[in-house]
Length: 193
Image (tube, rainbow, N blue to C red; front, side):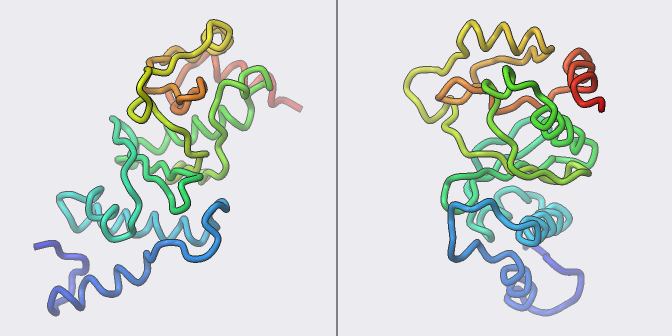
């Protein structure tokens, strides 16, 4: 049995408050979620992690966000309306991946931004990240590939993980949170006053 709270009571009393705090978005569906909404979802995910042996499926079921992908460091949920995704780290030490991805987007030169899926909102501590929803390699018949120009620009900047699972159907990189020292140096030089 899944236990959501440490206090007693029947299953209905334990799950009802949890569900009410994490109700799906109502109203406008194609807007970037508010910080308050995101924080509620992150808190619900943390509670699911602490109280379940299957937190991802529990969170997805209770909140109503389909899981789009689950990798070594993060899990990706589709937000209501289908325009954005929410990336949550698997563990506390994986928060760095969200920080790197947000920093990369924020400081990337325009020539690189053309090949990256935009980050719309990000927690400075890396607890969550909201990006545009794009079709991934599982959703198209032909495996997406980067153009030679995109591959050259991204590799020149230090991004090496250009495998097809990280490429969107429209030829942009959707997962670029790996730590690459050369890219960090490029971004630091660009971000100096």
